[in-house]
Length: 291
Image 1 (cartoon, rainbow, N blue to C red):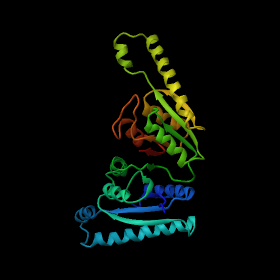
Image 2: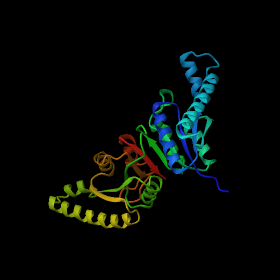
Image 3: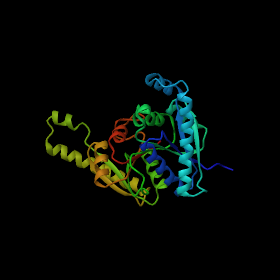
Image 4: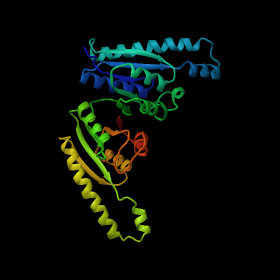
């Protein structure tokens, strides 16, 4: 019998990790997927802390026991809230967070990894700047970055699209994972080399005609794209992709932004390119990255 794919949430017991844990639990409850709560204990990190703070020699061992206890407490809290039959278990890993979680995920049937925005100061090479981005480079799983307290299910979702296969997967992931939410498919178009056109003495009218040409082209592609993802609503805006996405997410009061790791359209990016990183660092809401 095929195993049900798990939802995995990483915790360092910080407030940000608590937000991620609750969001993961809400998704697991609605989808019926088992939830796995993982914590990575880094012996090398604690050796450095022990040296810098002058802690006793067995402090790291004691801290590992405390971490195990806190994991058990988190599990019990979830069982109290969601019921004794809620499928949750905990795992204690060791090593560097990104590598340990990445290796764990390769051996586990999983559908989603959930992480918090910030870790505790000691782990903080920033979970966002370090662990989460490294995980994205090494996992084929969708990764949900949680910024806000999870008080309710996602209601308003903006999905970035450049009409690439990656964007198509992102839209399908969003609709499959959060079918009851309102979905907006956003595409930002722009005039390539507009600055160079001005240097070449192109008039405002010339540039405006070119913008209209790009708008019509984008509109035609959007109509084809949205037909595959109804009832999502399309939205075309003129501007730089990251800026437009962030502005529209605020305007639409989105509680989740969804985008692929990279696109293949007008702005070809590497694995975690400028648009993706811009959104990760500046979005005021949660962000789901699709492989």
